[in-house]
Length: 331
Length: 255
Ligand SMILES: Nc1ncnc2c1ncn2[C@@H]1O[C@H](COP(=O)(O)OP(=O)(O)OP(=O)(O)O)[C@@H](O)[C@H]1O
Ligand SMILES: [Mg+2]
Image 1 (cartoon, rainbow over the protein chains, first blue to last red):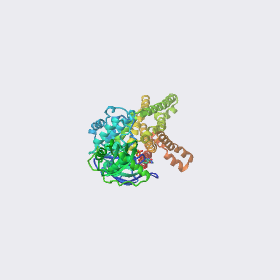
Image 2 (cartoon, each protein chain N blue to C red):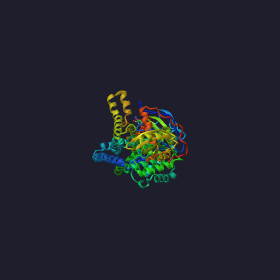
Image 3 (tube, chains in turn green, orange):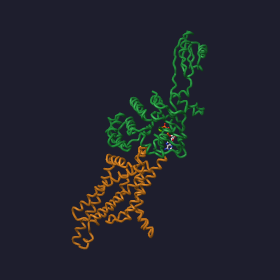
Image 4 (cartoon, rainbow over the protein chains, first blue to last red):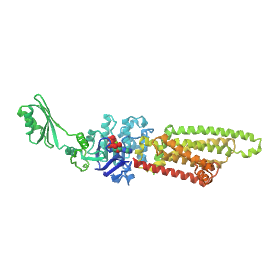
């Protein structure tokens, strides 16, 4: 649905994005991540046909964003980062204007506008001036204008910024409900949001894509090991030795050793759950088990590792380049 | 071409904010003052001319009321129209709404024309309101229709040029005041260019006075349709709109 190939954009002498390549399969919700200034908004502006790229190609909904821009624009909904709205207009007339410009037929326009206002929970402010709305409401009006023409592809630049916790949940649910029929690419700095809403991610840093794929396989690629936190009331040295002896354990690192207690991080192969064996070990040795916790590797850690690794100039792990599988959303 | 929705939106913004009413109010106020002084001068002169038959022959309401009124109007419009057009693109660029507008399925040309026609509609409303003045004159005395008609056609053409220049220049600026000022300066230049022609003399005089944006209006005010003048305004308008379109397209490239 979105095919980006070698996309490059120069602002004067400055290169904002360089050779960006990725694919988003139809019906997917993909998170577009990266630190500030990475080039997320720049890429999205090109995808939404606001500005042409300096090099490379991008196809959205099957059409080239440069040479068939009208076809693309008919099929997308775009929410820019700054949520620019006509503040001197009232909500309902504004959405009616957008619907008309986007070619929603006259006969269904009124109903369609009412529908999206319901969906975005802004019916109660429909007669208010946009200038008088709070940031969260404006955000929702922005989202409403993006989906008013029922677009195939949604390009949302930080759609949940400025919303209160309840609204965030509602808007996430709304975005999630769009999966399947719509293809969504959304940028955000809230990483748990990505795990909740998106099936795949694209991580971009300093203008280049550094990782992409389904979240699980990304985490796997960057963290091939699983980690268990253990705290035992035991002599540290013998406890360490015993833990090392458990089959499948690759490494045992000291976290904290003190008066008769010892805390370790035990790393094992990803598909091995060593907690049972550790528990059994404690019983056999008559050590008191104070803590036993399997640590999930989160997208945050992947993100930090990638971005920090880039900064330190470390070689990056190999990343699965396969596109996100179709019709599959992780919760 | 989706000119209509854009035009409707701009008109809505003109008439739901104080812009349109403010401009119309000041326009009518200033024109009312001019009309009042011109008309009372005319009535005084015509009373005196009752005793002086030679003077009476030269005195007719078309030449002594409508022509000066039209030429005053053209100058006031030159001052006022930049205020109408300055917001058209500058405001969108400042607020960033241009980023959304230019990703909707409308051509840049339709956006430009929508804005142009919206300002033109507001301008026509302003012109219609000034029909009050010939109406008052007609109440007191006989007035020829011809010169009034040509005068208004001339005003329409000239105003369209002002608006096209304003829309075009607005697309270059993010700041409305800058856009308005620049429009005013450009229009003023095309007005005073005729005067420098007078000073230059010879071939330059003809060339420069042909370029003058207000000199071409004079023939309309006299009640004459001259193709040359119509062609001048139409071409000027099209040229300004074309430059505006190119400027919009270049803005995109710069992002
Ligand atoms: N119009 C512009 N002119 C010049 N440089 C620009 C322009 N827009 C963006 N940039 C630069 O391009 C780079 C990428 O910007 P972009 O807005 O795409 O980042 P981003 O990933 O969206 O960041 P953020 O997370 O802060 O939104 C930045 O270094 C920015 O300074
Ligand atoms: Mg951004």
